[in-house]
Length: 109
Image (cartoon, rainbow, N blue to C red; front, side, top):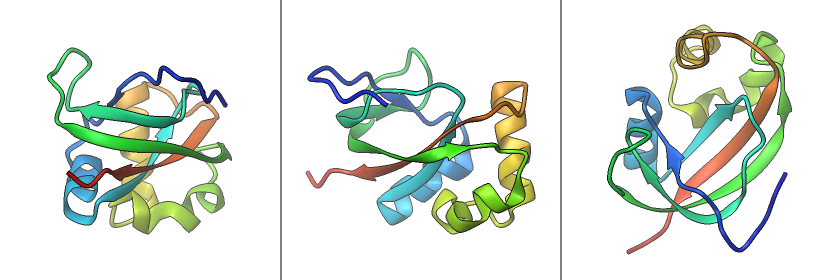
């Protein structure tokens, strides 16, 4: 995992994950690629405008097809079931390849 002075923005295209972030101030999210961690900002789409400031922390490497890898973070993800979370991962990534779990927290403004 990278921790650099420049941290790229993070996208929350999924409405459930975005709702979890906005309602609870934090969300557990799966990404297929290792990404930078630290202070950054989030947006709703790849080219969308800035929605707010946040902090990205790496949790662990995970296989999203393995229910036991996601279950400890399911509540933090905002999804009702691991299966719902897996369906969103498959839809967004068009695959269920191994990747990384991150915790994203909103910064107080």
